[in-house]
Length: 204
Length: 204
Image (cartoon, rainbow over all chains, first blue to last red; front, side, top):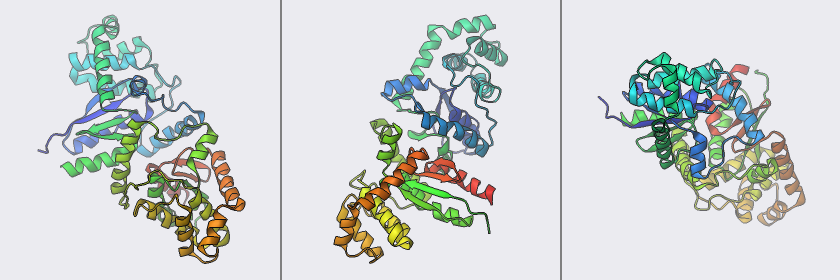
């Protein structure tokens, strides 16, 4: 058995590069006998706390990355379409993730994958609380029916869990999505996959 | 013979990621029967023209990339040490490159490589006009002795050639270093090497 490493995967549900990483990081970690802790955050909130501007505000950069999203998806072999509503508000999805992590942990990551694929493959409106509550109920009945889930998404408990995750992200100086922290070493961007693989190999 | 592709390699002499690309791009292009046109620019001037802020101003990002420079150099197998004077002023190096391109084109790229390696391997002070004039003279005597070269570095002709290159870069929306444009398609960052390789393969 390899020594266990801490692999924290920070991402925002509205981040295409975060979605690409979500399709790769678990399999990469598994190849090295490791597991990944998924940590959805609100990137804009983390950036604000760090005193950084929102990403890709300038049209020149936005034009480049819009093309790069599609090119990188092809390069990585990930199914991707720029969603009609982009970017999305992601607090409902992120709060739902942390509710599930507490109440039905086995389905938290499958739920996150369903949200990301729903958004980036099928263009679903993940800003919408009803859509998110519906997606939760498709994973588990442990949180109750759609109405109950929707109420929980607005609870202080759900807000606090997401707030704590963002505070932790700011503490680790997470300034982008995806942002992977392996045993304290930070890797920003899906482009760092080969270097994460090298680190996991070196530690094996 | 493969069809010729236009490969423009924009970089700033003070950019570590630009230096890493400079150690890779010619060999990659050669594998596909292509040649690269090197285009040193002053990145700060290009960013100003595009209305973008200088890169890495924020301490959180600066701390990350300083570590990432060293990690990426190891990953790419490039000899690299953060120069004692970082960043450098690069107008003398860039003007010298364009003077050589006109008067002794065969040594323009070898000169650029000597500057980049002198800076990032040996920590030489490439901001200094005398150092740059000296490096020119080690490549060729076609521009005259050190004194003459130093005078030429301050000539309107040299300034104009660099200015024109920066205007062209701004026209191609070059917002970082390295920035490679292959037949009109833009690739930002040394991380895009695998995708540049894929494009060159697809076109072969």
